[in-house]
Amino acid sequence: MGTTMQGSIWAQWVHGVNAGGTTQTVTVNPNSRRVTAYPSMSGFTVTHPGHSHGAFGGGEPPSLEYGYASISEVHWHDGDGDIHQWTGSIPYLAGGFVTKIKFKVFDCSALLVINYWE
Image 1 (cartoon, helix red, strand yellow):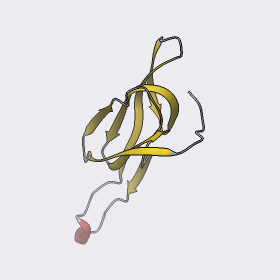
Image 2 (tube, helix red, strand yellow):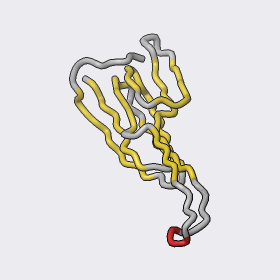
Image 3 (cartoon, helix red, strand yellow):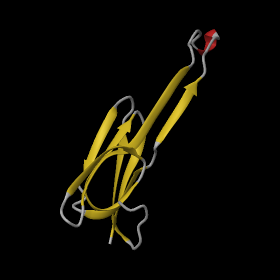
């Protein structure tokens, strides 16, 4: 799997996901193509301050909110036809002979993008 691509993008797949409060998985099968892929967001964390005044709901403790979007699984084959699989969490993919990409989005909205290269 390479880290850069050279040439021209000949197609692009873009998909919007709104996973407010849930986890959504989106699977795409690029048909053994050279691709770059990424979600528009990799992650965020927000700390909500506590509210002690009655006008703001009173007595609410501080709270933490977070979400993320990543590539969670990739399948590809090498020149000898051997199939490889990787699982984990990465924010960006650049590679050839890619046959499957799985995106995972948790508690946020994100655009998922795949660029197909000539």
